[in-house]
Image (cartoon, rainbow, N blue to C red; front, side, top):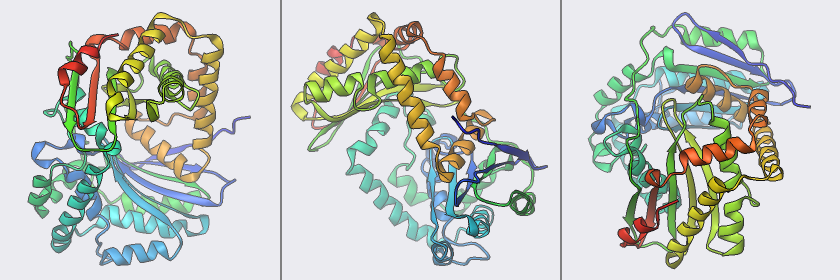
Amino acid sequence: MLRKMKYDIRSLKNGLRVVLVPMPQTATATVVVMTGTGSRYENEKENGLAHFLEHMFFKGTKKRGSARAISEELDAVGSIYNAFTAKDRTAYYAKVSGRYVDTALDVISDIFLNSTLPGKEITKERGAIIQEIDMYEDMPMHTIDNVFDALIFGQEHPLGRTILGPKENIRAFSRTDFSAYLKRNYVPANTVVCIAGAFNSSKVFAKIQKEFGRVKKAEAPGLIPFTTTQDTPRVSIKEKATDQTQLMLGVPAYPYLHKDEYTLSVLATILGGGMSSRLFMEVREKRGLAYSVHASVDKYPDTGSFVVQAGVEHGKLEKAVETILAEFRKIKRTKVSKTELEKAKSYMKGTMTLALETSDAVAQHASTSLIALGRVRPLEDVIKAIDKVTVADIQRVAKDILQTNKLNLAIIGPHLHKDKLLHLLHI
């Protein structure tokens, strides 16, 4: 029996939203402060600023004068803490034993609201971020999505640019740039404070109200919407001497709240979710073309994508692309069996239930939902939506999105024959 989670959502006078999720069965508590901004809210010259700013928040506040003071306080209570920047959100979080929730909330609130952005730390952190960029450059598996996003969204649109930004931007940012970005994008209207786990609701809410209630009301930043105009298949190759070729093959797809949002998720699971999925069986088990292959769906409020990612031997790239495309053709032309559909649904429901077992996962889910959708989607609603998907829905959606003129193939590896690959792209 699925246990219903209670999401207590409140708004402060300045527009900031608070979500409290009591989980009496757990011994931990997680504090997340998430703001609806990221690299999508940067212009070309600002690209990389949202992520750099996230780093700077850990460099000291008026109360906690240094990065060491912040980390020592959280380490002293055995906290797991970090932050991340995505294209459309930035979050700061700390997970602690329930008895230390006050410490976690105090530190995370302080860094979010009172960071001093010391000039000398900006200078030092430039080097760390350039090292981070270099580290990911050495990990094609983690940067292939940059090549894919630039291809599907175009580099002139913020969604097509990287989160880390180019090195020349990192070297050029000044303290004024950070302050301006902070003022424009970190506002109560696009901020969510979430606490999940074991905590005292009234005590925690009073603290949030006291700290965050002081922030002035301001308008949430706007974004440049994205509409695809693609009418021909495309290939992008980042030529690099690697031991393995990384590829992403995908198409534009649905935004959040689209009527076929869950049908697409089930379709992705049938094709490339888990080790008994069609692509895993065909690409890895039958042909030994890749060690890992999986399909996934990426969503934004105005657009989305469906993509297959694999790492393959250089000489087997074409064969792998052909095998993936053959599976696309098959799912468009032949209805999936009722058994296969039910297996995919059970897999999804099982993995989602497992994923939402811990206080940090619940807090991330609730914050992300509120930022992206303006409400929290309870797990039971998601499960109901998955259950409604039919065999006919799968084929209809496959025919709708899997079209030759919408294909995008991104590659990192020692390859030069773009035309040869372009030739393969038809379904």
